Every structure is written in structure tokens, then in C-alpha cells.
Image (cartoon, rainbow, N blue to C red; front, side, top):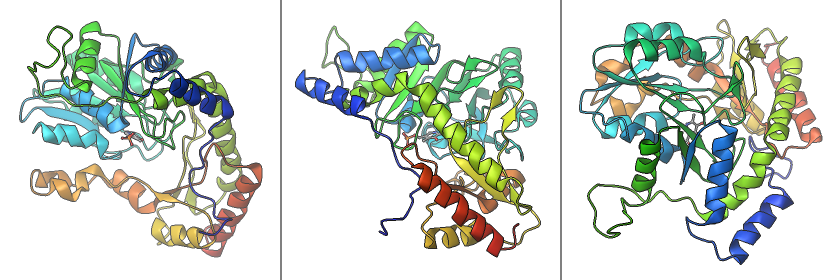
Length: 378
Ligand SMILES: *Cc1c(COP(=O)(O)O)cnc(C)c1O
């Protein structure tokens, strides 16, 4: 790879993080238990204003535990956005429940809260909300519906560490919330995740299910199908110092997002992400751009031009309702989600890693501007 290539994500692992990993090693804590795991869980739960945090191997596993605890029966329904990652869908399908997709809002790119009420039926067992790309979902309407119909909320806050909705932390809503600590997330353990809840018995169930269903009384006698989803002490040690830096981490991503916004929001051929909503400033977990409706171009064309010039990109999510894996089991799901479809066709995001230098950020601005201009998007 060209040395000057700027990947979409450059992580920022500091010496304090490395020292804490070394300390876990030196103290002999190398498996998924011990004080480094407990500290990471306690501090992260505190950040999210939650009573319990249960670390797991990744954000997908956290979602699996959360969905698992809904005790879904075949045919039960879960409402979720069409514009999100496959991790949100997997466990719903595994337990033979039915996903009910909600289209995206064209401006926030989040699930459109106005479409949720009409999707509720007598079989709706949960609403899964996902904060997309660093801007929270408008939670108040969802929280009201949840109360009105007695339907629990599961909150996927994997893209919103340190974010808040009207001052209430993302990750503090609903029955359970989930996070990922994948390499590009605001706090990273390389791979990792957490499920959070205020409910003591749910927390106990998550701990039990993540640890092979072992019970202290009769360790090797099992009553339930469970998993081994233990996050290692070394990974927890890597993550803990980042929790103390969360304000700095968020500020860096916001500053980068605002600089990109200043550089690109006047381009006629581009729809830029929102700077803010009344309930939150955009944290720009990633900086997405969407080519405007009147342009014939789709994002693959611009992405390959950028990659050729040394700027890494990623496409937006593929609409979940269109996933080929659904064709057999739920063919009717393919019905149009026009906004999610458009986001997929026209959207992409550009480098904003926490380890990026100012020079690299300037290069990104320069090259993206040139590529947009040469494609008549000025
Ligand atoms: C990253 C992410 C996940 C999955 O996390 P992994 O740790 O990669 O399994 C789930 N949901 C959202 C919204 C994400 O961005």
C-alpha cells in the first residue's frame, strides 16, 4: 500500500493504554476475569448512567444477548431501522422472530420516528433503536410509544459513546443498551462490546449467558444453551484509560467533522450530515456524504476516484430489508425503503480516525474537494 494512503480509520492508542495492558499482563490477569474487567465495566456503566455493564466479545454479541432476553417466540415482531448494520438483524432471525423495518429519515439518516407507530402490532415485542453515525435518534417519540404500548426498547449505541440526547447519555435508554469497542469506535478494545441495563436480574442473566451458563453452585451442570462471550482482561485494560479521555475523543471527532462540514457543505452536489438537532450536536462518529438526488452518479464512482487518489472510503449500510439472506424467509420485506435505498446508493464516508494528523485531514479536504469538483458537484 502507498505510504501516503489515508485509511478511513487510524486508531489512537496512547502510552497510558499500553501501560495498562502491560499491567494486566504483569499482574497475571489474562483471561476474561479479574479487576481489569470489573473496572472497565464499572467505569463504562458510569459513563452511560447505567447500573450494570457486562463486557462481551463484540457489539454483535451484545445485541445477541439483548435480543435473547426478550424471550421472542417465532412470529413475534421487532421494529428496527432498515439503515443499519447486519448485527441488528442476526439474532432476530435466529430465534425465528420477524423484523419489521422502518425507513430512514432523509436528513438525520436515523430511523424515522414518525413511521414507528403504524408499524406496531399486537405481536411487537421490542423496538430496536440505533444511533447512526454519531447523531442520536429522536428518542422522545419512541420512549412515549414504548410507554403507551408497553413495548421494551433496546438501544444500540455502538456509534454514540459519549453522546447524549437532551443531556441524557446514549446507552442509558430502555431495557438494555449495547455498545461495540471495534477498532473504529470512539472507545476501542480492538474487538469488544458491552450490554448495559439497570435491571439486576437481566444483568445476572447476561453474565450467566456470556459465561457458558455456568452457575456457581454446580459449575459444570448446565440448564441453558449459552455462549462463551468473555472479553479478555487485556482488552478491558486497553479500554479503561480511554473512558477517562472520552471528552477529548469526542471533541477531536467533532472538530474534524465541523472542519469537513465547512469545507464541503457548500457543494451543490452533496448532501452533508446535519451539524445538530435540537436534542444533540452531531458527534460525527464518521463523516458521511450523500450525493444529491439530481446527480446521476452513485457513490461507487466517487469512492473509486478517491481511493485512486489515496483517500480511503467506506460505503453506507446496505438496506437490511434488501439483504439477500431475507429473500427466502421474508420476501415481502424487500418492498421499498426509499430513503435507506438512496443512502446506500449515494452515500459514503471519508477518513476521520482519531489517530489522523492535521496534515492528513488537510489532504483529505483537498483531495475530496478536487474529486467533487472534477465530477461537477461544486
Ligand atoms: C459496529 C457496530 C456494531 C457491531 O459491532 P461489532 O463489535 O463489530 O460486532 C453494531 N451496531 C452498530 C450500530 C455498529 O456501528
